[in-house]
Image (cartoon, rainbow, N blue to C red; front, side, top):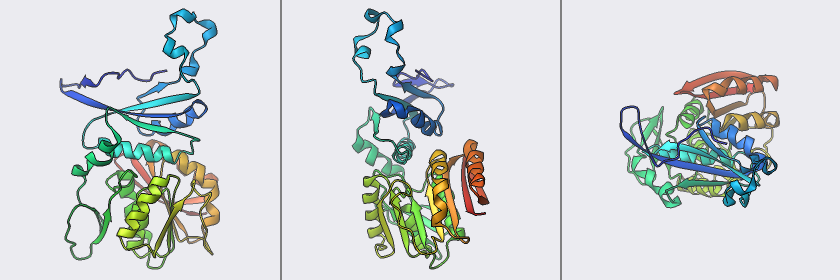
Amino acid sequence: MMNNNVDKDYVCGDFGDVVEWQQIKVTVPTVELDALVEIMSEFDTNLLIEDLSDIDLKTCYGDLIDEKILNADKSHASVSWFVPLDSETAKKAAMLRAAVEKGGFSEYEVELIGHNEEDWANSWKEFYKPFKIGRIVIVPAWEKYEAQDGEIIVSMDPGMAFGTGTHETTRLIIGLLQKYVKEGMSLLDVGTGSGILAICGAKLGANPCRAYDIDPMSVRVANENIAESGLSGVISCEQSDLLTQVKNIAGGYDIICANIVADIIIRMTPDVAPFMSQKTVLLVSGIIAERCDDVVNCFEQNGFKIVEKSIDNGWCALAVSLG
């Protein structure tokens, strides 16, 4: 089954320019294909879907079907996203990988067709420079930066984890953190990735902070960034599938943040109230604008109140409280 016909390494644009494409291919068990398509459709609707279980051998002449298809593993299916190969490619790949990791799949594989994992992990670094979000300046660990008066420096090496801070979703939620975090507040970061939100929260005065991610690699990267930031005594980071292994604190957290995707936020919504009080502010991001109403409706149906909505370049972030 195919939603587009991009099957070449190079195609011509509208003005005759040659564009090189990168294929990002995700494979999951066939029974979980619909969930994968939902997640990847939040990034692009032009997807290549490979599902050989669709073939009905009873209605086909077997000798006309390629032997590779007949013998292929029909228990797994794949979805591919084709993106232009440029300075944004690695960031898009990292964001998709993070969304898949948080999707609750029983198993998955993410491939960059044509580029090895070392390229994925390192080639983007030349495009990642210090940048400012309000008072916070995100500085790559390999860059030097002299802080100006009033600036809060957050040094990051996201490695293979999602969270450089450059994407709209992360910028939105960092902006909200600066508005709502006060000295001594407790903070929970669900789906921490590189640890960037927990670190920003701690730098703004939150203490204690707890961060969780389903991916052990992200937990490792986050803990490295936390240690490099001198915040090991303030932030703890452990593995959890959303809220299932999260340790609560008496009275609930003051701030909860989750930069994930719409479907995962919707899945998490019925379970988050026990971690909150009437004063808690829940900050969520990673929502494409077209799905914002779905997320808002889910919160309202579960007894929450939307405090604030922020939009940036087609992405949405929400501040939410108990109703």
